[in-house]
Length: 428
Image (cartoon, rainbow, N blue to C red; front, side, top):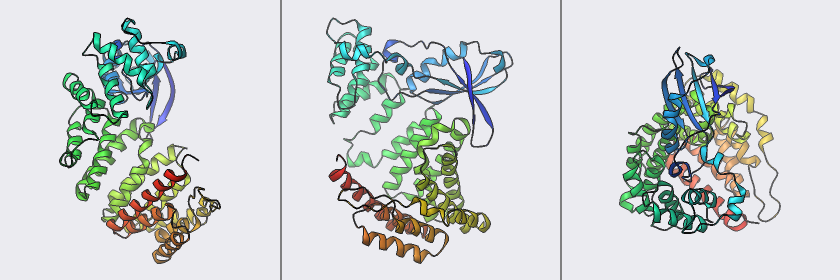
């Protein structure tokens, strides 16, 4: 057990991050459930006798989080952690136990293969769009253990990859037998074969998951999906109520383990735009500040996104009466925006990123002349009608003046043009 570093949270305080170095004990049928591997994150508080008083799951695979909780509670932590609160980080157990290359290249599943080896091989062989060998392993496991969680979930994932409805009988049986298996419940709701009537209840079905005791990062993910679907169904007011919950939950996550929230900064930017369009300026400021917190912490956030965040925040501060801070943000980008302009595309199929028209146009409609900003963006569209980036800027302009439908139309055009480019040139 080691204290590896300290992480500054959204409120500016510091929580120690403790790396768990002990072996994790899980049954094979739990350990070898194939999933997107990631560290298990808990918020832990100890009393002065080093007994666990708070153990809160923050992020990670739900079956693992539940499986290791008792082990953590019984562990004797270092005296230096007595009467403290810290983040406990545990390496994903499957990733740790799934690194044997020999198994992948020489392992074979048969009816007589040892059951534990079948579990191992099923996890090793599972690859998106290349999982026939894994399916054979799962079949032999189910022949011996029809209630196997690993085999039922693995088979369901293979069915999903094949776009086969066989997935949902397995998922429904998993939810019935393992109601705490959050990932299986989510996949059941996300059924791509949902009817139009079922689509109408998608956001409500996601909402039912929020009534469960789920990890904080998973709660952020579900709220984010719920907001997306409500907006898609033109339930803008409902979407904005969910976004408010999302902002509060994401702020809490940033205050505990910031990197778990890094994936959502683009959604926070869009939430800010939607709230801006509906005149909810204080809520929009909250959304932009969440995006800004991520951008300040994550070096992978591109400068183009930092630009959008700062300009959105500048507009909201000005509209809410804080002209001084708004002016400071605008001045910071008044010349710097030129560094974001990429060179023009000269050859057929060359990907065109941000051109001068839409980059300067964003600054103008946010900090200078909205009319000039619109003109610059429209000129960029005329010059490069097959590029998606001017339409993205146009969408942001429309949101900034309260034209939600026009903004959504421009977003749809940007998505269509980007998809068309990927279909034609993406593999070249």
